Amino acid sequence: MAYSFRVGTFNVLNLILPNLVYYGKEKYTQEQYDKKITWIAQQLDNMQVDIVGFQEVFSEEALKDVLKKTKNLKDAHIFMAKNPETDKPSVAVVSRFPITHTQSHHQLQVPLALEGMEAMPVEKFTRPIAEVEIEIKEGKKIHFFVAHLKSKRPMLLENETRDNPLDQAKGEARSLLCRINEAINLRAVLLDKLKNRGCPVILVGDLNDTTTAVTTQIVSGNPPFRKWPIEVKKKIWDVVLYHVKNLQARKSMQDMYYTHVHNGHYESLDHILVSQEFLGENKNSDWAVEYVRVFNDHLVDSTLSDDEVNYWQSDHAQVVAIIEEKYKEQH
Image (cartoon, rainbow, N blue to C red; front, side):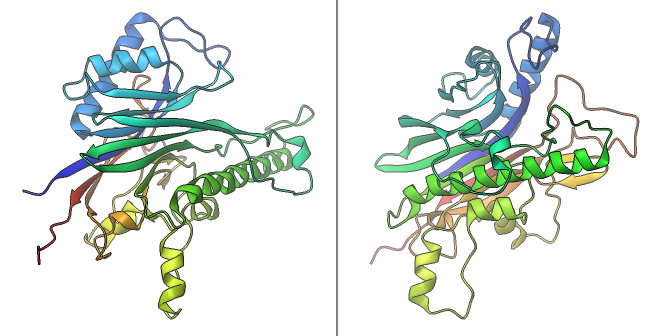
């Protein structure tokens, strides 16, 4: 039987200890907190993940409380990329396999010079990027990244309001520019591990845009044009990341991949991207993405129903990819 492992991404929607205020006014009672961590733990058990990247985690202690309630992750390793702004959420990695190296990326290293950018916070990622090295099997390591890019929520100036359509448009444009800037800088971080390294890389997280959005494609890069020379293609394949959604679509007759529902729009904001070392089509790869599942049964379309997502649940789906070791004949 082939050796396999599962990776996942999970936006937990404001995981914070009880009776602590977040976003200036919200907080959980002990009863609400218990419901939330129980639901998250149940989802993790359903996902059966070995490695998972979390977004919107305020407290490592709260994450530990979740893991205590799980069946398979009680003794897992944790790395949380602490947010310098302690009143804001961050990202974290949980792994059943040993974590051999950790790093957080906070500063934006690649400047984006556009008119008006000086009015926006462009020096730091809105949430730090978590990077870990994980030994998934003796002698075999991967680099695993977790990201949560700037949301589409409009960034309004002091003299602007959401009631003004033009102010709203300008605020959304600023958020897009911030997400573009973060995407470029995340791409730079990834290239450091991808280019000429032969290093297996997996990126998971809430990129706050769809698979084909410009910002998402900045992060992943684009595959080469099929008519280009093979040597040119090899250089591009070396630094491109592939969406497991698309790898699954090649094997399936049905596309039910959506991870967020907003105002009737079914969107895929939560992604797992892998380097060429996980492509089944790559004859030199040791691994292949075999199956992808989206856990979105709890999501509600508010335009069709009066139901709402319960406060202890997440407003995002969870995504899991099963990765198997490829069998290679011995010659």
